[in-house]
Length: 251
View 1 (cartoon, rainbow, N blue to C red):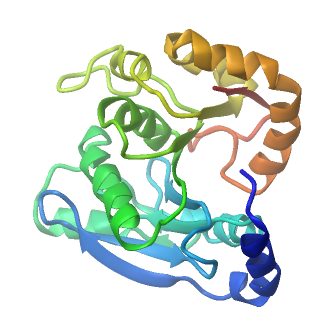
View 2: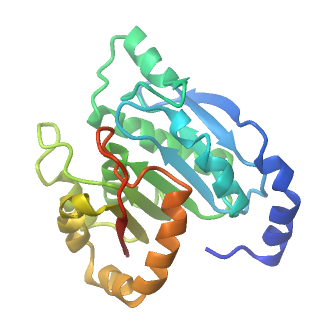
């Protein structure tokens, strides 16, 4: 996503800012649970804004090294603690701690409300340009569900290792695939090669116009994905797997 000239100039001036520590903030989820997040927003509000959601058993610490690199590429960011998680890179999941203290359900699917609240909060408070939802593993599946079922909540989706991770009620074996049919914004999907089968049905459910766009730009996307993955979450969204060479699809 290209920045305009003013945004590019601001990016060049913001180099030292990108290296600064994030600002930790809190805001309420739909059930009033306090959500903790790290804000990385030294660029103008008109810059693209990415809301970063972590993988299973993790926290916003998953993005402590990634977010500054995204800032250097021209994106403001907010890394969120969802209620389903533990810690990452020595950063405890404060939202999960708060949920545990309140004896709330902390399943992966219950974290959907945290994603929706975070995206709405970012839109209301910070993002004046495009707003992107970035998910890792289970949150990659959730950002696809939210984008399909909550029209307009995000202007684009990046899903790292999504899959049908919610087969039990109130989810369903095809929850993510069914939601993907209703997505009308650009989608980027990547994973380890061994996980391609997990998201192929989801990709196939996207509208034909989106899938045609992905085929026409496949060479560019593969080139970009290498840089993206090297500066982002491990391509394998599952905590027990080692990163492998990713395969990508963009819609």
